Image 1 (cartoon, rainbow, N blue to C red):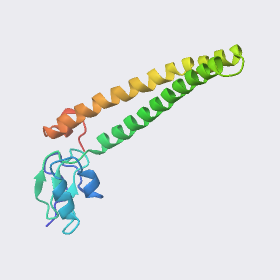
Image 2 (image 1 turned 90 degrees about the horizontal axis):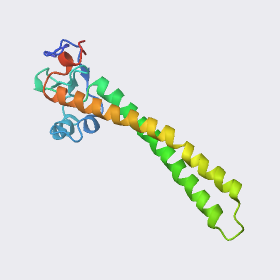
Image 3 (image 1 turned 180 degrees about the horizontal axis):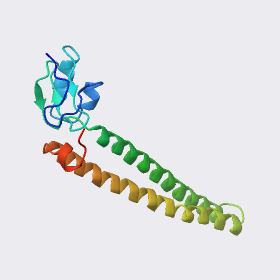
Image 4 (image 1 turned 90 degrees about the vertical axis):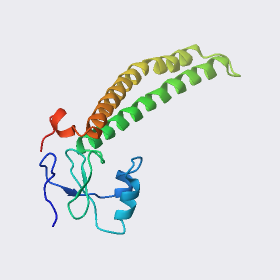
Length: 159
């Protein structure tokens, strides 16, 4: 008989899709591989509890919650934007150096323009960097509370 609700938080259980990817870098990765050849695992998207195909609780806080997955995606997006603006900074400074120290006569106006584009890119670089750092701190807090078995209670994520 399969349980339809989580024993810990009362949220509806879901089938664990992509068990190898979702359990990667956890101590339950082999269970995910084994589930490919046996009954599918069930998870609670609210507190991260993992259940066997029979509805037996296997681990508390084994899987990232839905909120953690959304926050991790947001963190990755902010980090990509930060890195993109970092590339603009480097490219602007390299272009300015090339225009000043190139083989032809120095084009001061073009060098100032390229340099200013690189300098103006510092503001979005710092902004997106702070967003990525803040999301990373919040993600670590969420993971720590999930692994302690307090994910649904401490963070107000009751189902």
